[in-house]
Length: 287
Ligand code: ADP
Image (cartoon, rainbow, N blue to C red):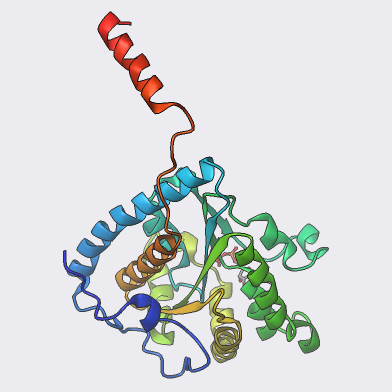
């Protein structure tokens, strides 16, 4: 299939100093020339490519390569964070993927530095790690609700940049996706959860309390995107009102990250000719 993208997703959705959430089109298709049906068909094709790249990464990890990929997903309630893990990573071998969700810190976690629990969940060599929420909660919910004073959360932006630089230097490619849903669409999705028995379980009475802080959250997201989108670990702003689009965009970003690793299938660590000859002998002798 010919590419339906008019420009690389990495360029179109890359966040930086010029990112302005107040004008960002959360329902847009940013360079995708096609409808939902085309998007879904294209996603299947790209999924096969993603699966092959992931298998190469896994194979490289088994052969002693140290590299890995970390996908960080942030987004307001209902933005579709869980759907990314299910629908994007669902297209690859689950053995090679570890998904970690970060909720309210436990007592043990609170006793440590906020990056402690994050570090435990970094992907091992050859794996793709997915963070459903992340260390960025420590400059989002923590900032919005004053869970610590400003002079404690303020230096975290720089601290996170420096920490991520070390993680990247140790061989982990970091791809950060902010799923951006509009305020209206969030209300539709919350309402939907109250009208479908298969979605009641997703509803939390605190979701509406959090929604009341929408503007503060937008400011916190804005600061996060402008202050922590670095060359070593860029943020991508993902329009999330169309779920199919958000999932396709994240698929493309993962493919890009894996392609940049320039992975090769590992060479055999055994004598190929000798092993082939052994099999041939067994064929001939019926053994
Ligand atoms: P989800 O809402 O993603 O389905 P949970 O019900 O476990 O998952 O909710 C996660 C909650 O934990 C969110 O409200 C989030 O803001 C909160 N949280 C995550 N990290 C932190 C943190 N470091 N400090 C305080 N709250 C946090």
